[in-house]
Image 1 (spheres, rainbow, N blue to C red):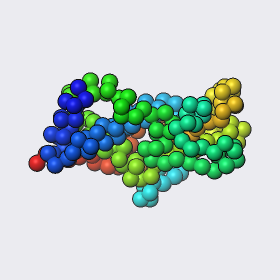
Image 2: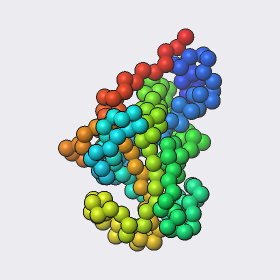
Image 3: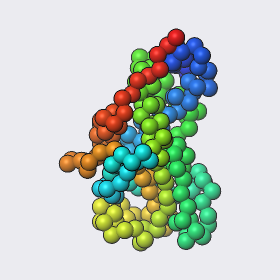
Image 4: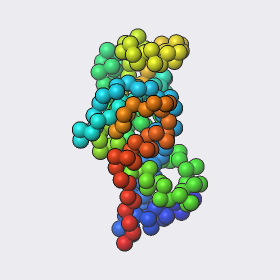
Length: 204
């Protein structure tokens, strides 16, 4: 199924694209779909931010307990003060937060044969976030969070594991005004599509 999916994406992108290119698109689509699923856990961190090109944005944060297993995903210093000064950006930020790698995503291919164009669209959305330097992962002790963010996270800070291991905060800048309702994956899709017309590469 994976080979069939790669063949499909190569045909959609054009014969001059390699298998490696197709794999990269699948990984970007997978990363974006993982990010979209995390949006239900996100909170607004800053209502006035900007993307790399100056586009007005809001900054949202998705918290993760920084378990030892997650910390092994990056070279995080042992000293807490030094660790709080470090960060990871781009696709590496998603990976360090727990997004699965390509080799674990065979299940995604089950739907790709019927939705290859959707894969290219999700990959383009994720590439837009990378181009705009919109993804960053940091580590914080639960007691060192800004008051407003701590208030929004609420009960999640009372978790013993969060107190013991600290939190990873995946910050995402989204080109939008603060939403009136809850943060959802569909909101992220709509915001990105409004600021970037996503056109998959035509074949030929």
